[in-house]
Image 1: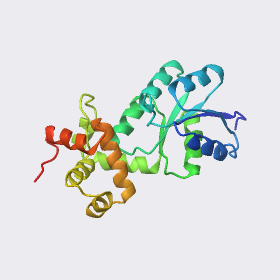
Image 2 (image 1 turned 120 degrees about the vertical axis):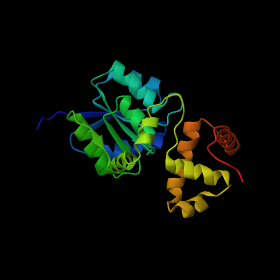
Image 3 (image 1 turned 180 degrees about the vertical axis):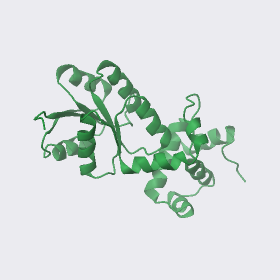
Image 4 (image 1 turned 90 degrees about the vertical axis):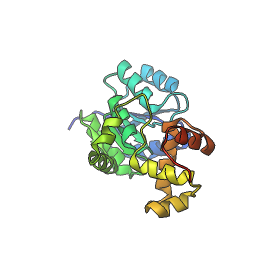
Length: 221
């Protein structure tokens, strides 16, 4: 096997995340974290000055999304491979990130070994989807109409689970109550809520309910 050191750039708007990943990855043989970036501007500056093989890319970024950032970086630096490292486990987000040019997709709640495996697999001109992401994709293969809807860029598409969560939010259920009603964890409920707000481009419960009523997504008794 070649002695090439895999040079990694971490793009995340949380410095704590960058520093934590740096410490963990520096212990891995054949992997070197060259830097961390908290914005598109910082990432481009680093790419101009240093060789980077792999970017670990967060999707929730303050100025431009990790999806748009991935598309731009892949256009400017096609040799650089991108792996999404994110909390988003929604099929439409996964699909958009891969279409933007990502070669891998892993979740932040994964273990460190999977991050290392993803870096090595993608560096060898491969692709890597974490087990959790593969399950999401398989689940959605059971409802082809939803997959077809995700190709429509002109309107947000909520999954069947997100619609269930939205219905209960409209009924003023707490995260705990939603979790109990749908047999999912509060953490999963919070992830669904976050995805719903991002997709509908709303910032408050009032705005979300107004949007949902206008779009006929919920009915209030």
